[in-house]
Amino acid sequence: MGKHRAPDADPTDFDAATTALADVTGDYEVDAAHTRIGIRARHAMVTTVRGAFTEFAGTAHLDVAKPAASSVTLRIRTESIDTGQPDRDAHLRSADFLDVTTFPEIVFVSTGVEQIEDDVYTVAGDLTIRDTTRPVAVDFTLTGSAKDPFGNTRVGFEGALAIRRSEWGLTWNTPLDTGGVLVSDRIQVEFDVSAVRVA
Image 1 (cartoon, rainbow, N blue to C red):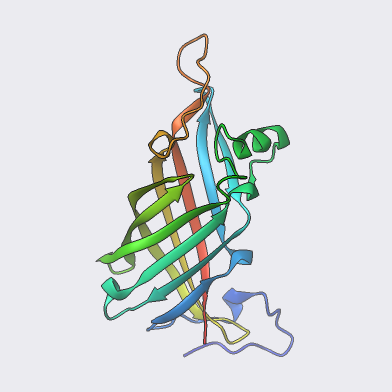
Image 2 (cartoon, helix red, strand yellow):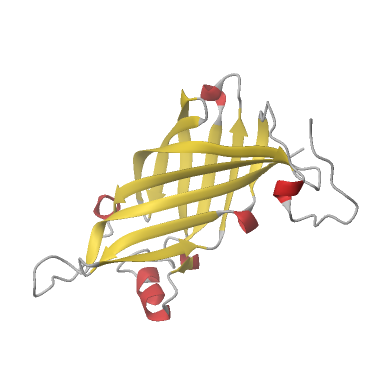
């Protein structure tokens, strides 16, 4: 049985007013206000720098009965990179890295979806960064589904992707006197996604 929202309930308190759904099949849009696309990289071989892209849009088609019929498209504005340090962000936006003037978007388009556990799906697709497109695969876990207080069908997914930036032509680096390099080649991309079903 579902819970009902009391007249004085806070409509943003999803936990107090939602219940899991058995079938989330349908077309969805990523809810940017409740989604995070984060990045992590090693800096100077000793610490981890974290950041996020703050502007993006995405759509998905989910098919519970036939997961292979599902699909995902995600577009990320490269100039929205935010690591909390303006000089570093400016360098990441420059031609040394993302070259946001020439390449304003990072694009992911799925090519296949496979269910590997009850709530885990492997999403294969093409990832385009700058002018290079390469295949990748991300395991996404369905973290929840609900009818929110506003009547929206909402689903949540979490996933992470490790890539080598050099494979997309992002090769800038500086060697350290003590050995190693300033910025790791390996980058972790983290997805905490909330999506809302569209009519």
